[in-house]
Length: 290
Image (cartoon, rainbow, N blue to C red; front, side, top):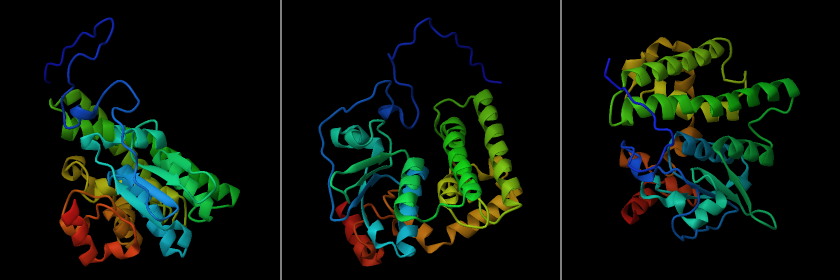
């Protein structure tokens, strides 16, 4: 095992960069670093995001609502480049004081309503449009239990396993082993659940699936951290079945493209202001502007 002996000081101070892929945006304080107003588009719903797993949730949710015929779910999606520190602009901090994507501004009423944290946005939209969350008490409880399971579990998959396996400047055996064990335990939880039901919350597709798929579906489909072989994801057959089915949904394909700046160009849509933006010709124009 690598020697990682470290004696913590009596008082921790921020006196050096922590290294790793996101070192330039990590800091121990909140609040804006610069003045920058957020753009506004023509639709009542304004999404400020990036297509990380948490960002993908909201893009998928909005596209699913539109696919169900909820015209009021039309939205403008604006790109927040977290690597450049866009999330620390004064306008963004005004919508999300936690400076994390995604953030949503609902301008459909007399006063704009801000919603931040991806799970809160999913639930807000589900209740606003009366869709993708059950109303029967037992089914609703099941759905929300899995929604909040994702909120509590994903940091171990992302900030835990993903960071130490893929991004940390030093590979620490203890940290990788600890979080790989937890990632596999979480996938086993989902695999066992999906052995008994088609979707996470039961027989209906809900916000629980939309919340969980970008993280755990992405993992078993080989879209996260290049770790599918390391974690032997093929062993979770029911989870793979579910992830593959969700990935094939047209709204999921569209939502995954929104605010994406990595991967093949044909899978990126940096900004989204109208359904026709998914058209290849419009998409190419957006790419040229970015």
